[in-house]
Amino acid sequence: MSTPSDTPRPPRHELAVLTFLGLLAPVYFIPPALAAVFPRHPFVVLVLAVASIVALMTYLIMPALTRLFAAWLAR
Image (tube, rainbow, N blue to C red; front, side, top):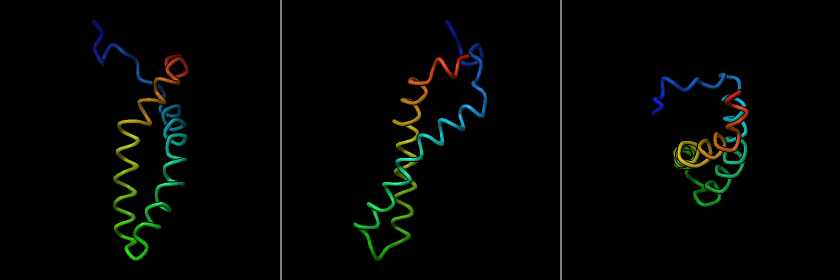
């Protein structure tokens, strides 16, 4: 059985590239969408945008990207 310490970690620059790719769409679309819903509350827009982007990155985007690019990350 493999433990996390048995698995080599991917290089940081590869994780940085995946993080960049993962952030492109949410950072582009979420803040303007929330600003349309809460036009007079920029702080609410900021808080909700950051919270939703962090949740999406943690639970959906990065797991999907790491599975999609698993072979590239493992070399």
